[in-house]
Figure 1 (cartoon, rainbow, N blue to C red):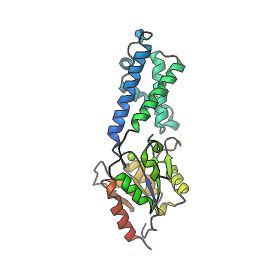
Figure 2 (figure 1 turned 60 degrees about the vertical axis):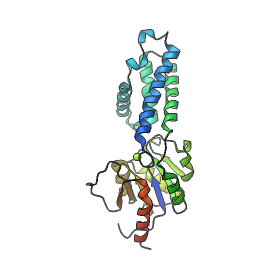
Figure 3 (figure 1 turned 135 degrees about the horizontal axis):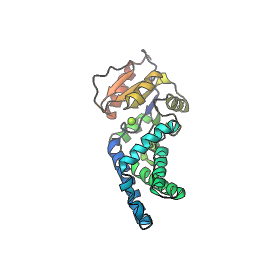
Figure 4 (figure 1 turned 90 degrees about the vertical axis):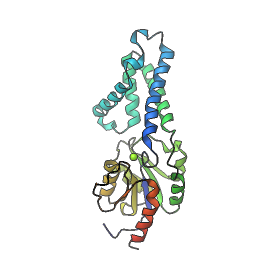
Length: 252
Ligand SMILES: [Mg+2]
C-alpha cells in the first residue's frame, strides 16, 4: 500500500475512542430503568397492585435479554440501539399489564431519560484541543454505531460530518457509513485515516476500503498482527505523533 497519498481526511469512532464509554453506559442503563420503575410505582401503584412492582417482574436482566432477542427477531434493526431499547420496553410494559398506548408513552419517556444520561459524558481531557488542532489541517467526520448524538455534545463543533451508522441501518462493519462520510467530505479512502477502538467494526472495514487506520487498542492486544496501513495506538492522544510520522513518510 506504500507509498501513500498524503492524508487530508480523518474519520473518528466516538465511544471508547474519544471517551471511556463503559461507565457512561452503565450509569445510563441502570439510571433510566430505575427511573421507569420508580415512576411507574408512583403513577400506577394502586392500579397495578396485582401485577407487583415492575422491576420485580422484569429486572434489568430481563430487559437486556429482550433486547438481544429483539435484535435476532428483527435483524434489520439490530444496529439501531435506541429503537431496540424502546421496542423492548414497550413489549415488557404491555406484558406487565399496561395498555399499548400507556406502554408506548412510558417507553418513550424512559428512552428520553436514557438519552439524557447517555450524553452526560466527558471526553478525554486532550480531545478538544486535539480536534481543534487537527481541524485546520484535515477534514473531520465522526462515524458511530452508538446512539451518542453529537449535536448534544460540545464536540459537535469539530465535526462538519457525522454519520449515525446504526440509525442508517448499516452499522459498522458495513462499508457504507465510511463511504458516506468520505463522500460528504469530498475525499477518498487512500487519503483518509480512520481512528477507532474496535478491531471488527473500525479496523477491518476501514482497512479493507483502503483507508489507513489508527487502532486505539484499549484492550491491550499487542500480539495481534497489524495489516499494512494499520497503526496501533494506546490512546487517542498519540494521534498527532502518528500523523507526523505518516506525513514524513508520504510520497510527496
Ligand atoms: Mg468505539
